Image (cartoon, rainbow over all chains, first blue to last red; front, side, top):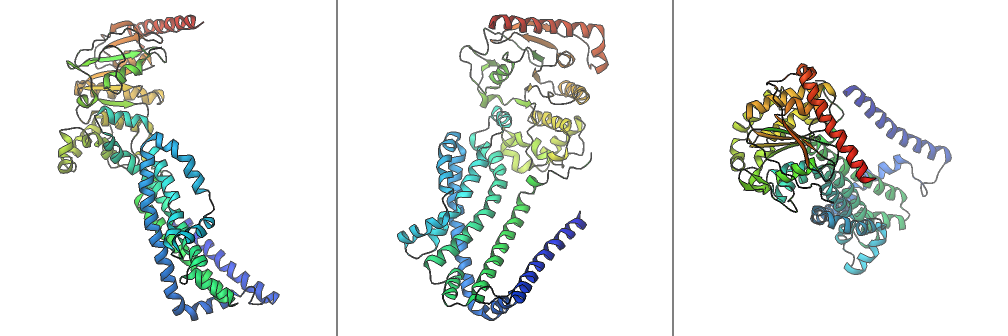
Length: 255
Length: 249
């Protein structure tokens, strides 16, 4: 139903505009100092003026994110596959994984700075692979005993079953976890830039904040929000294309 | 306690045998033994003159749950066994678009699903999925078909419709069929021979031929001979249940 879809989108866009308008009006009416909360119009102007300076930092942040993300995915897939293939390994390792993934990610960064210096990649790596491990392992471990029996009775090997059933069934879990992982990687990148780096948007914001250049701090925040949304959208689109079957159960055709 | 006590069951090539009995009597265990999914703790299972090992047998199986893979079309779901069983496996890359596809669609036509090959499982009803499930069990032309309550989850009318379809398939493919069921009418409609099993540990209480002429129709199931057979089977199972209840007490 494209009509309804369009209305929904119009409402969402309207809400975003409304948010900025309300913010602008609030600042104007209360006479809020731009050292505390700059008006969005100021922020956008700053963003426009400072964009040539911000650009290399944006690239830096994106590069860090992607590097950490790629490493995290690779590590996550391997670990998840190892754990997910065997029921015993899954049951054994799961509590440990839950423990690790529930550590607040900020808390890990200082440790990584201690170990690796002010490099950013290791920190990112450390926090974005957990959702992937957990999702891959869950996807592979979800059993369908009857189908397995059907295939085993045909003489299928463990690999046959994994290749034809286990892996494709894991794809929705995998792509769902990619969306989470890219957000984590992004958060991790900014976090480590803030704590221990001299480049990247996170660092720009830290510097601007210590110079009381508040509009620039907010400009950095806007950039981060924009990047975060863009990354999420890209992976949602990929997910929709690759694993559309998992979300299409609703529109059953009449037969 | 073992699932089965001393059980000897001899099935001829091309027979349609139904196993009925109270729940937990080891009917499904017999299927799993025959398919080679489990090994007997004592005794032997011989199929085609050789002791059973799954890799050599390649029987077709179907369960109550149709387990179609949701990311594949019905056609590709049905062709799945061809990806696994030789000699089809080595020809799969070459033939999947032509010969194998025709094969799958020919089977679909036999079960009344002509034109549904390109649909996805979520677009089909439970009865349709179960028909597709039968096709998947038959695509690699197995000599033996093992069915574990395949129609258990369907409504009465769909079930009766599928009895006729299964009967047609059996008459056309002449595979040996071993059917586990709780439904005595189903057993009497489909089977050429019915084995009644006792409660756990299971053994065979009664083994009788069903001689009604084929093809049988649902109307036949209300004829006196048919009803009498049903009542006889029912009496066996009721006795078996009481015996096991007394044994437990």
